[in-house]
Image 1: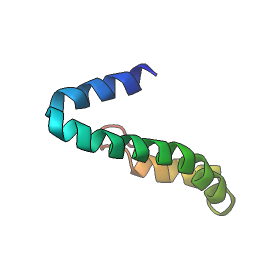
Image 2: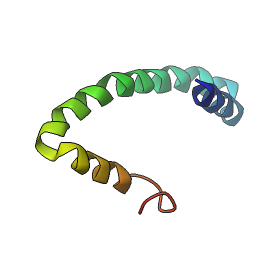
Image 3: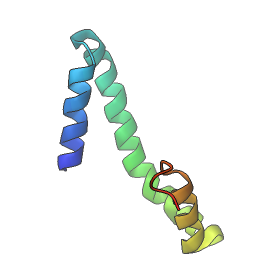
Amino acid sequence: MLLISLAWSVLADVFAAGEAKRLFALMASGASAGGLLGPVLTTLLVGPLGHGGLLLGTSRNLPPPCSP
């Protein structure tokens, strides 16, 4: 929860008031869609890829200092 609050306060500092009014609803809807579709996609992919395949795919999406 702290990370989400920190991200929103950084975005509030980055965008001007007019941009924020226009973009925050779009970002909030994207975050909600990701929160709903992420578990569904994971459930669908664990069958064909397995747990190891999902972990390997996730590690490929991390920034270079974090990936093996």
